[in-house]
Length: 380
Image 1 (cartoon, rainbow, N blue to C red):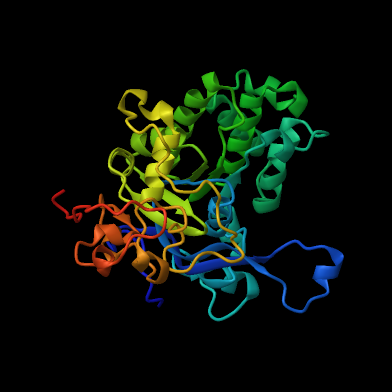
Image 2: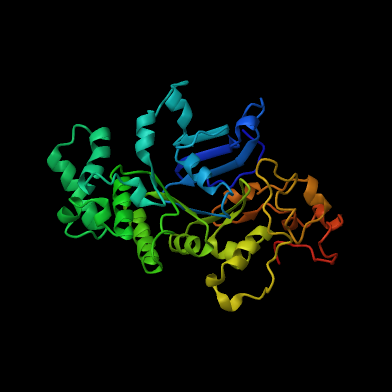
């Protein structure tokens, strides 16, 4: 086991997915001359993340573009192989199952059926040359070849009807270009649900929709999540969408920065009283959460430039932009804390949450105002 702290759930809950100290590093794209070098630079897309997904859970991952949230989501559902660490489905290491290593208790095919994805662009995910019915029959033919044509189509029509595509027989015989963006997204949702999955990754699943359709689609996702007892990992770059889903489902919001989860917990706590300075930046940038509560005129950040993920800052990765940073932040890496595993609790990887940390006795960094900030305690 890693000595990293992790946002883990109560052991009494049935875990579907469990990630332990997972990192995903990619070689940075280079020109021809640079590619001749032996040691290609590594982009640290995800770095040292440990997290559990229990049954019927909703986890919304939020962060700036390039923070690693989509890569982490794909790692959770077994699409992306980690560079380091383990990804387990109901106790079975996914990649050991795929590679046939050790005693495989759950076949890789069963794992793939149980972990599904809804892409940001449903139109691009659907074959433009195939009718909806053909696209939806394909996974059932692959994973349940003994199902009769009559039963297969009955299941498809029932799910199309369940997501509001009526009459389902008519929609089933349309091509993707004959559907609206919202209808295409519903077809993608049906395709995922056909497998009776345990976890669905919804990667920016509502960002391409008109504002009027977003709430309707999110409500549908939540209804189906409860009906099918499916866990959702929802990827979003906006806190407003993440808050809506997480609050309605009594789920969690995880804030990501440069490949790390830096704050996680119930949405009302994370958004109404953010502990990590970066969470405050996202809160400030999302005016539609509650414009009347916006008290800060200037963004709570020293620099708008995001560090290079090939060479992230030492210590706290946010210290180069943080308006609260001190010398200790440059060298000492903050951890989320083991208490993140307790239901209903929230943790932030920031030294300011520890009233006894040496942070409070170290000097402010250049560009940070030297003020006597009171120590943060649990009672504050």
